[in-house]
Length: 427
Ligand code: H79
Image (cartoon, rainbow, N blue to C red; front, side, top):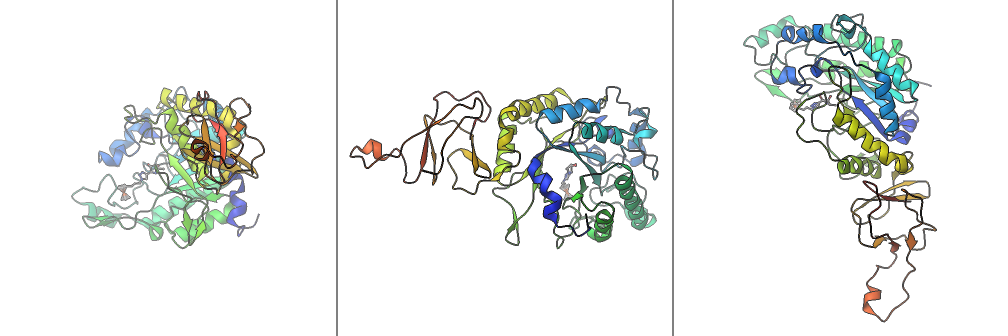
């Protein structure tokens, strides 16, 4: 595949897959209170580094992670090779701050990628542009040392050019030593942030053009996300974080390839006291809503310091598994239906097949605008049983018959009792 292979060719598998697993795992699983704990609590890097000697996930079983993701209907994984804390899950030649230098002693990244590949999933890595451990990464408004009295003087000793060399070397190491990778997910740029004489970082700090060129040269088919701060560069995928756009996002009037990333409850890394867990209904509706707007969903879990998915993550994946068992065809390979909206529903489509995701089960009748006479058969996905199509009413003198539908509506006759699915879908 050539380096100028168009984005559409790179992303074909990705838009077909629709559903992936994000994994945030690093030293922050030990404090167990958010992956930003180091900067939130302004912990100096040398103090934070004490967690290195405590990283010993004795229950680590990536085959179990991969099975759970596969069962949930996910088709790819993106795992944090390095998050903002700077700890590397792989055996990098360019740092000692890595999993192989802990009591655990393993190249966790390789184990994870191998396990997911063995389940047939595509694999991607997350690489943090931000690095709160590297001594040359300058102190900026989100750095743990941002309130250090000598921050500006300390920065004079720091050399971002050396940090960039480190970053480029690591990206090359990952792209050449870990088998074919399907996604590289950079995070993130914040050039407009300024405080106390410290400024944020963006394309010039990362040398984003060169970094992207390096990625394209080493891995022409890889999908790159949009957080390098290159506004004029058409990214492969736009990545709204913890929000659902109201409609298919566009850029210069053209629809973009996009992927919403969401947490189960707020933090990305394992956090013991998780306040606001999404309900099963919210989890399923998020997936259906995203695909109905032409997007992918990357749902996150934060494994514990012992290397397991906690009960909340396991239950959430089981919620998806149960639902996807019947409804995967309404997600995978699907996109926006581009039909008029139906009340309380989301519509997805694959070719000439329409899927109606019924968010709020109505009483007896479901009205689908503009589809009268265009649907040969309707079935409920939970059991494959037929759903009645109400014959269009002829001109009827009785008023109650005339108001039973709008002109052009397809009217479905539903069972009164909501089928046993978080979100029932009619095909
Ligand atoms: O890895 C996960 C998060 O840790 C990371 N991205 C996901 C995938 C992330 N966390 N927060 N953010 C990205 C956005 C951060 C925004 C803010 Fe700010 C940090 C708002 C205020 C501080 C950006 C940076 C704007 C000002 C500084």
